[in-house]
Picture 1 (spheres, rainbow, N blue to C red):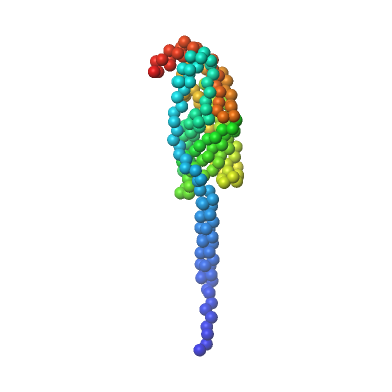
Picture 2: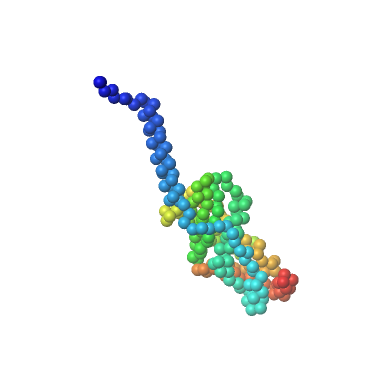
Length: 205
C-alpha cells in the first residue's frame, strides 16, 4: 500500500508556534515571579513612638537633647510610609511590608509588595535629609531600587520624597533647634521653656 506523508497545514504550524511562544512567556513569567519573590516576612504595622518619657527625662536632667534609636526611627518611618500610601493609593502596585535600616544619612528599606497578583520583594536605598524647620522634618529621598542585589532601572519601584514630621509627636512647648544623624539613631536638640514643658507633661500623666 502506498504511504502518504501528512503535511502540516499553515494553520497548524501557526498554532504550534503561538503555543510555543505562550509557553515560553509563561515559563519566563514564572521564573521572573520566582526571582522577585519576597525573601523576608514583613508588614506595615508599627509601634507609636512615645516622646513623653524622653521629654520628662530631659526636664529632670535640664539637658535640651534627646536621642532616638534606630528602632524608634524604623517605627517613625513606617508610620510615614503608611501615611504616604494612604494619601497616594496605587491601582497596580501595593506595598505590604517594610523594614528600615540606617547607616548615617543612608537608609535601606526592605520592601514587600504586590505588582498586580504577583508578590515581590525589593531593597530600596534612600538618603535622609533633616531640618529643624516646621518643628523638625525628616525627608527620605529615593536613591535606588534593587531586587536580589541587582539594581532595577530608574523609575521602576521608585518613590517621591517621603516626609516624616517630628512635630506630630511632641508638645508645642519645645522648638527643634538642631537634628543630628548618628551612625545608628538621631540626636535632636531643642529650645525649651522648662516650666511650661513640665506642666504640660504632668497634665498628660
